[in-house]
Image 1 (cartoon, helix red, strand yellow):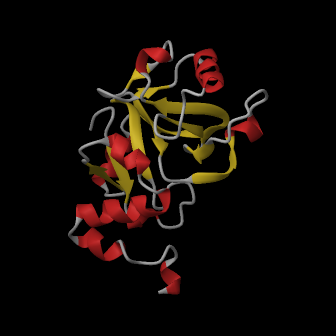
Image 2 (cartoon, rainbow, N blue to C red; image 1 turned 90 degrees about the horizontal axis):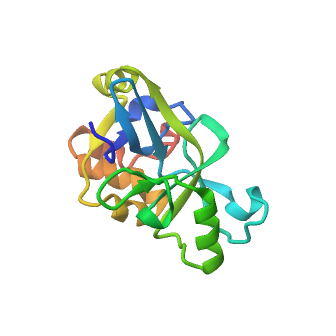
Image 3 (cartoon, rainbow, N blue to C red; image 1 turned 90 degrees about the vertical axis):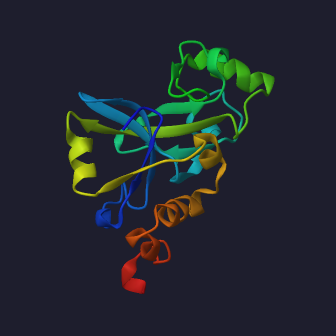
Length: 181
């Protein structure tokens, strides 16, 4: 696994509200621990509802169960947001929020170049590797993470399951709660 890669929750995590049907972008992957953000869990409120002085109605996403009262973001703006951490060739993580606020005021941010999260997903040393080993997660290759970010969140997990194929193809069409089947 590498920073900038995706992992997809397998059906074995049924019952885990935090990660059920999640697609996670790893923003920091190290043997000492990993950090990522759930891409497909949109919250019912917007950025302007949680931040004073922000008037833009950007959607917020549930990034994970760690530090849910903190705001994080991934973006494609590179140096336009100072102190950003590079995830991949075209994707960055966080940076100076004053830069974000200035870009918001100028109207230079949109849902295709930044995504905001409350909380993050984190794994301690060896934890993620063990969870992949027991098939709680499947690493997922995609040509462009940016294309995945633009995908409607309700379809993301299903489309990843279909792309994985094999045993996961069957799961792609099951209802959210298998008891309804």
